[in-house]
Image (cartoon, rainbow, N blue to C red; front, side, top):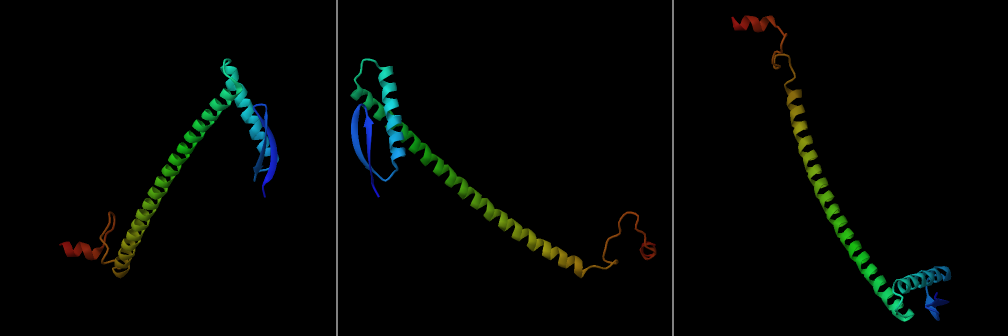
Amino acid sequence: MKNKITVELCDKEFSLLSDENEDYVKSLAKEINLMIQETAYKNLRISKSDAAVLTCLDLCDRNRKLTDNNDNMRKTISEYIDEIRELNRKLAAYERQKSGKGAKMSNIEVAGDTDADKPAGPGDTDAADDTADE
């Protein structure tokens, strides 16, 4: 529902229709008036209407820069998300490959799990091995 709100900008009254609440719209008008006054104070030779136009130009410039910055941030975030997806894909492939090799290795170890099949380690002595070497 549209709210009818009256604000004063640059010593002129305006009736507006807005979806926003009255306090919000009036706070915008107050902020704009302060900006116009600041512009007029910095440029003592210009009229209030000229100060209003310069303020509009400044606000438009700020808006465009913020919009461009927002677009750049969205693009960067999107690139990061794509990179994360690719890294997750690579990690999953690596984990599948690693678990596949681990399963094959444990099958080999289980199939050949006898003392005779194990190589002798340092300090391991077996009388049967000693006699075989002679």
